[in-house]
Amino acid sequence: MRTQRSVADGFACFAASAILLCAPISAKAALLAYEGFDYPAGTSLTNASALSAGDSFGWADPWHASIKSFATNVAGSLGYSDLYGHFLLTDGGSMLAQGPPVPLTGNAQPSRSFTIGSLGGPLTNIYSGLSNGTYWFSFTAQWLGPTNAAAPLYGRKGDVQFRSGHPTNYTDLGSGTELVVVGRPNASQFNGTPFDTWTLWNGGDNGAATSSVPTAYSLRASNGASFILLRLDMDDSTNTADTTYMWINWTNLAVEPEVSTATATNRVNLTGINNIRLDANGASTLPEATNYVAVQFDEFRLGTTFADVTPYTLSPPHLSIVRDSGAGYFMRYQGAPEIAYRLLRAPSVTGPWSAVSTNTAPPSGFIEYHEASPPPDQAFYRVAQP
Image (cartoon, rainbow, N blue to C red; front, side, top):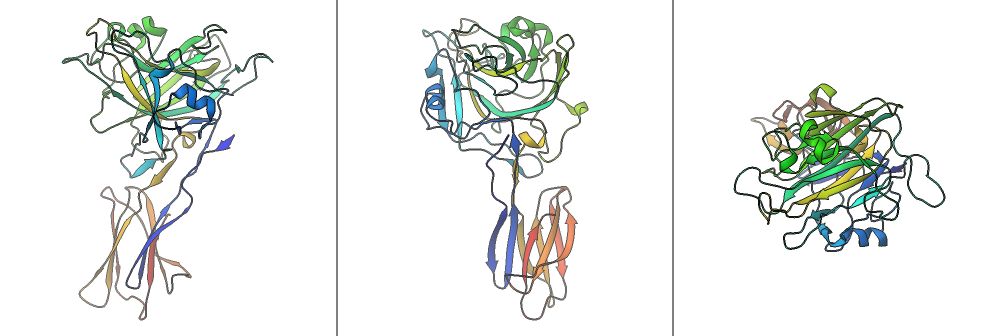
């Protein structure tokens, strides 16, 4: 297991008169597999991942795709921030999977295998995959490209598939099995409305008609990328169904959700998940020939705990000093709701530091402390957690 690169523990500080204002920044996570698409912008995903691992790990091999030019690295990450001021850590790049418009044919289908489980043999790099236990997976994504004038906006599918066996594009090794999928199936195989929302299903394209359920979360969110969080509860039997829970845009990256709050659930046997495939299908004549799918993906994380796949940094509190009507000061800062903060004071910038107040931020995030009798010479202040 390897440690995810993160922002180092430390303080962001500035001075105002004899007051030192500081805010902590820290985040760490450990993962089984990670892909932040830290490759040169404009390059083919398959070619770039074959030349360099970037910042990815936990994979048996580079990305493979049947049509390489349909999966391209792009500059800029797909970030996510929750309701409490937590910002998902990102790695600087992302990837665009795009099915071609007519008259071209084909689908973008990059796939990659995990190095989890036992190796299948000396002549293969295919591993046995996930065994019984609980696993967490997360990623960010947003749908781009042309849309129809009315629903369904997209006629073709875009998704992340969890599969067992050989990855799709290892043509010399045969094909694997699609187990559970998150995204949106082809409109013609999607049973329900609204059409253009995230969903979870199993049973392949045809199974989507009976196993998928629309959610309230749009594929093309107006505020940017969606954050997809999955929990996979697996037993050690190949004959019983396992459970996949999905949350869209989970509201607090610091708190593990209860399964009862899941946006959607799915029951199907998940034994042997050892690779993922991304789909962005090319144009078809239904409902419009130009209606190919383009999906931007980023920040794939697989771990055994919720914290593994939700590394975050907090936005620094904004601390201000306002003189009262006498000789004191009001110390005011804006934090994140339900996060505990300590206001520290020291006679010099090197300390020693001592807490003068500890408060948990209310829903507004606003905290005020009245320093009615400050030290007579000088004082330095900073905000820390907890």
